[in-house]
Amino acid sequence: MASLGRHIIVEYYDCAPEALNDVTHIEKSMEGAAEEAGATIINSTFHHFSPYGVSGVVVIEESHLAIHTWPEYGYASVDLFTCGESVDPWVSYQFLKEAFKAAHGSAVELKRGELALLTKKDFDIQQLRDEKSTDAGEPIRTRDIWFTERDDKIALSMKHNGKLYDQQSDYQRVEVYETQAYGNMLTLDGMVMTTEKDEYVYHEMITHVPILTHPNPKRVLIIGGGDGGTAREVLKHTELEEVVMVEIDEKVIEACKLHLPSIASALDDPRLNLIVDDGIKYVNEASDGSFDVVIVDSTDPVGPAEGLFSVDFYKEVYRILSTDGIMITQSESPRFNNKVFKEIYQVYRSIFGMDKVHCYLAYIPTYPTGMWSFSYSTKGSAHPLNGFDPAKSQAFSESNALSYYNGQIHAAAFALPNFVKQMIDQ
Ligand code: SPD
Image (cartoon, rainbow, N blue to C red; front, side, top):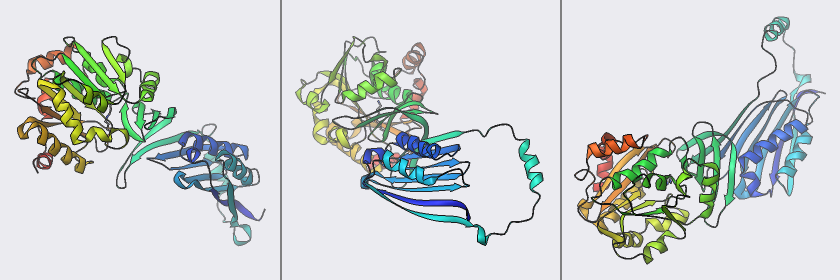
């Protein structure tokens, strides 16, 4: 051999797009390609980017294998770099071509470190050997796979052990990841919806704020909320007589029952009337004044939830609220989704009235920027602070062993930073 290493620069064309967007498949294939070629794996790191694309590297004792994919073009670029005689990078090339179902590939081999051009340096190699021999045992193999939700300016990444659920429903891509920091995590179309470790913030705040400030809550409607977290919290209010939840996507329910059971725990509760249907249609067909509290637990305003952010929908929600009815919605992040955030409050005020719409905040680490908002719109006399009894809220929090909501948080959540107030008042 006339060089230290061989570097094959590879292009794979017309691959299966889904294979190039599946981070666990890519990780497995890259590691398989390394092993098949006779390499010893030290470590691997893979990132999935939302909505599509994967980058990753497998570090091997004999150098590395690296990949970047563009599923939307069915294209992957790969580097296969090996040193020594024991590993054949062309075996990896063929292995990956099959794994990605590439219609064709091209490759250029470069010799790295031409021996004819190298001069061996004179240094005390024996001393280095002695130092190395004191290291403990076999190299430790580590694994890094990352999920990333990003827009063109910021990104949020979470390390995970792989996907537990991955289905394309009639409405969206439904996935559950086993994250290392936040437990199992539901994503829809690549956006984080909820995680086992921080879900309580969102679900407690979207639920207890309205129910504990309504003068006499009896009938609650949840639109969306297929993971079940909002229903679980609503059912802690034992005075309620009717709880209806309308979720459009049964795959979300299935995924959460299977992999997020602590969140989905109430979905089989006989007190919950769970309807799998379009929430917009349900609201359009419901009678005037039929609910005291309507909670819109939607995804972001793209895909199936788009209609849940329309003026017509909110007018219908207003119609089906009872005299003192309250509508609660998740209203995105004032920092991250500032355009949508402003529009939401303009629309609600045009329907409910200027002084009838309030905003409150909570801190959710797995949502973009961590600062998340909820809207509280009231048809009659209910008020989030005037109608609020701190002692009652505190007692409710303690008797239900809540993790976020309490009497002080309730009041504090309505204290808004100046920039948020300005966005709402503009
Ligand atoms: N960008 C995240 C918005 C998530 C809103 N809905 C979450 C559903 C939890 N039940």
